[in-house]
Length: 106
Image (cartoon, rainbow, N blue to C red):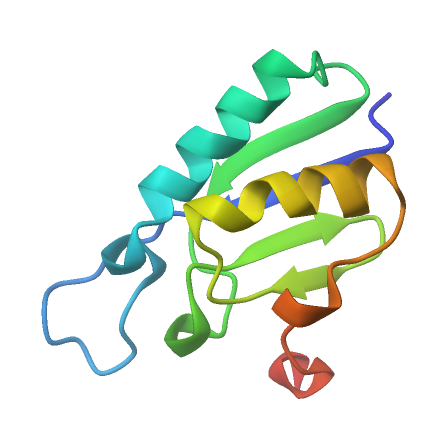
């Protein structure tokens, strides 16, 4: 059973939609980098990775959610994925600079 599960929002909406979308913010590149890191570091089995639809705070995307802690990262870029993998998944220490405020859940 995986220790942690990473959800990467890849939701797309039409251009000009008032909520925006993670898909318009290079979410596909973020997901591809997670796939690359999982393969390179042989994380499959210990960790799970899922591309998902909307996670809520569209304007702060691309968003990444890590369970079981329920840590939400916002504005994630391809170059941030290595830090999430190394610090959060492998080091059990969330990447504070990428966390969204807890109010996004309200």
